[in-house]
Image 1 (cartoon, rainbow, N blue to C red):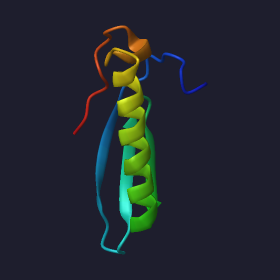
Image 2: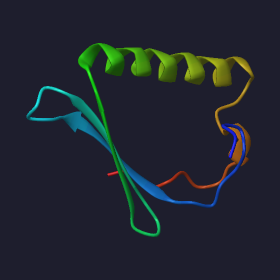
Image 3: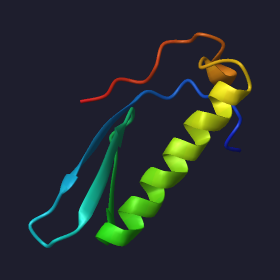
Length: 77
C-alpha cells in the first residue's frame, strides 16, 4: 500500500514516553494488530517535523481533507 492510497482500516494511535526513556508510537488496528514503535527523543523530533511539513504541504495544496475526500478520520485515543 502506498502512502497516498486510501484504506478502510481503522486504528487507534497513542503517543507517549516509555519508562526506558524512549518515545513510543503505539498503533492498534482492526484485526488485533498491535504495533509499538519506539524512538530515541531525537528521532521523535524528526518525525514531528515531518508531520508538520506534511500538514503544511496539504494546506498549501488548498485543503485539509487529503485523499480521503472527507472520510471520517481513524479513531484516536
